[in-house]
Image (tube, rainbow, N blue to C red):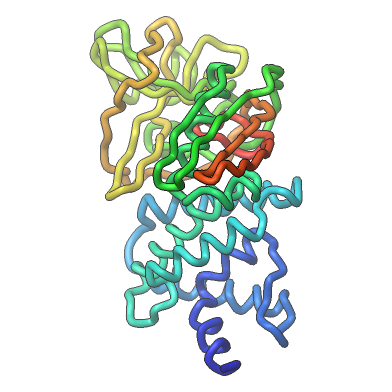
Length: 329
C-alpha cells in the first residue's frame, strides 16, 4: 500500500511545484520538504522547457497568479492556505497534469488550471472556501469586486453549493500603494507609469481619438479609436489627466485585460457597469510586468449559509486590482 502512494506522489510532482511557489511545507513522509520542493520545481521547469511555442494566455495568467500567491504568503499566514493549494493540486491532477502520456503543453495547461483554483481559494477564508465549490468561490469574489467599487453589500444565491452568501464592505476603505502585475502590448506601450486603479469600462466620446505610447500629448500615436468605441480603463496616471487603457484578450476559455496605451481623460466617459468589452487574440508582443499602483482596499466580510442552516463567516482584506478582480492587500 505504501509503495502505491509513493507512485501516486511521484506522478504528481510536476503539479506540486505549486506548493513550493506558495512556500508551503507539505512533503511526503521520509523526504525533507525543501528537497521535495526542489525536485518538483526541476520537473516543472523541465516540462516548461520542452513545451513548444510561446506560452498560452492561460499559462501567462497562471504565472501571474502564482506570483500573487507568493507575495500574499509572505505577508500573512491566513492567505494562500493549505485548503486552496490542495484544491488546486486536485484540479490539476484530475485534468491530467501528472499523466506522462499527455503532451508537455497539455500538462502545463492542467497545472495552470490548478493554479487558478488555488489562487481563487486563497483570497477567501478557509471557513468560507470549505462550504463552496470553486465556481461559487469565483462568484463570491466577483461580488467582492463590486463591493470594492461601489461600497455596497451584495447578496448571492449559490445553487451549485446549495447555499446563499452575502458580501459586505466595512465602509471604511483605505488606499495603499503596491506593485501589481499587468499585461501590456510591448509594441504599443513604451512607458508603464504609476496609476491610480480605476478598473472599469469606458467609451470614447470623440472620433479619431488618439491612443499614445506615453501619457503625453507628444507621445507617439500607436492607434486611433472611433467615437463610441468601448475601452477598459485600468487606471489614471498618477498626477495627470491621462488614462491607461486596455483591451480584452481572449484565448479559448481564458481572458484578460492588456494595456495598449494612454488616452486623455477628457476623451473618455464611464460606460454602463455591465458593458461588454469586445475581445481579440493576444498578440505575440503581449508581456507582463509589475507596475506601481494606488489601490482601493477594504475589509470585506463574507457570510455563507448552507442548506442545513449552518453558517460560516470570514473577513478578507482585499484590494481592487487593475483588471477589476480583487487581489490580496
